[in-house]
Length: 161
Picture 1 (cartoon, rainbow, N blue to C red):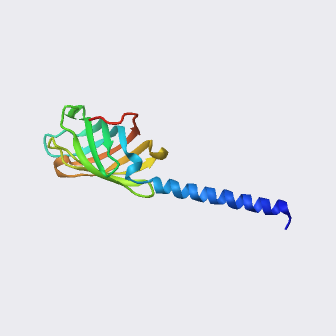
Picture 2: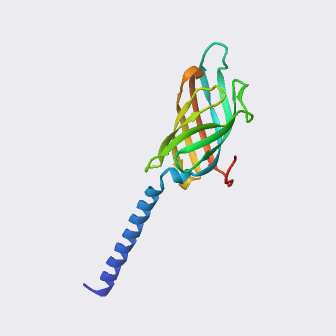
Picture 3: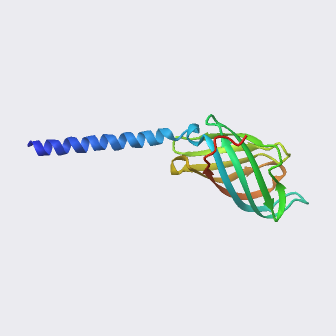
């Protein structure tokens, strides 16, 4: 083999190792620590049914959620359903737990202290942890049927509480 060919093969091998190690490192970053911080969420969806006397219709809201990097979270929110406020920022913060899988998918559960039933959602972490896209998979108790999705953007704040 000539020197140019050996140099090209060595260079391609080195580049391949770099790409493989970068891909491995990126995958390894997908953990609870990746989303440590505060995210601002916009929520939208539809409440399709519920107990008599509860609002039904379009749901919109905003939330600030602090992920602790260890599987715990705290959230404040303001939500309306059918134009009727069902929560606002004066309620006690919700708490919960979350898990980020190695493929950057995950789930969380919110436990509300104001009487609302727990909510479970699946999510994907995108943009290297700068964004979390969610879909509600369960809104138990008296909540009724709820179809909701949200997008959370990482905020430059270190804490909201």
